[in-house]
Image (cartoon, rainbow, N blue to C red; front, side):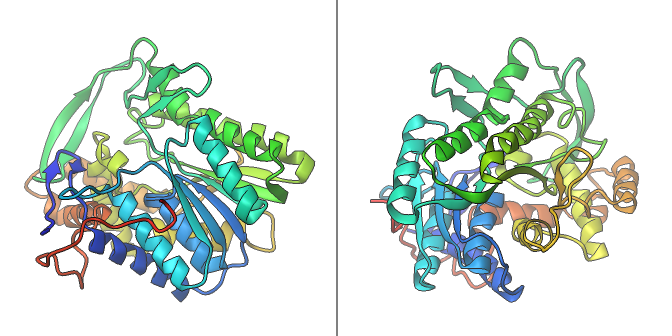
Length: 396
């Protein structure tokens, strides 16, 4: 079939298998170009199919020659209908890993569930014995609690008062003002239940109880802080409460891992174009301005550059892992430079529909958004008849 992008708001309803494969290949080549990383050799990535999770799997495999198990929840293709992009990303990753002689297997299912945790435990026992790095990179709007059965839904809302500020429709480029009403009822608790640290701790407990963690095992979850411009809807909003919970959980997990000399970290990463960030009002405008400045300064990074630097310069050095005063790894250091944020704040006041294409990088935003779904890559013939029925080799 001829596969074209079909947009609906901040979602693309189609994805391109060849384009997704090219995306994975590009990231692999970047990692190879940066040289070997003396990192973990048996890696579990929970949320492994897109974004930072995918970049972590690629960096582990092609930077450290690691065996990897990836857990994700993606929609497989059916005749005449494409899979979700994470499915094609994972298919491409396994293909490239197998060609390189690297162990790579995947599990497709609800990572919040006890069943998927047990399936993962069984696979590690059978194939790897133990793991030395666990990346936790889930990004889901809902979670069915494995104990209570309650379905929790997260919300992206401010706390206390309505929030009004600029935003942009990144498809049309129209800058407008938006008001987001504050959360109510159980919104905070539900958001923490979905995006906080409870499930991360459940994973680590399950792995430790099954004796699947090597001595000195490390686990890392990903978070975001961001600037004062976005804090009302992000870091001081419902999602911020969840991130606070995630960060507090790192200390609790580290205490539980002390007996095996293990450690849990939260890595605060840079703002990037993802399906999740595209859905948050205000964030697309901020990212458009940020991209413009960071590219001009020569310090822009995508997911793969961020994770390569996280591994090479933070996790796997001969020195202690550097953290901030709250114990967090800060790989958002370039984004949060004072000079960068001052320029963003100035441009924010100036931004209009008419000038955003000049003072911001809206084209870069759109390009990255299309890349999420496998569109817009050089060297891919998007007019060619393409087989949508691509398998992930290890998933039968």
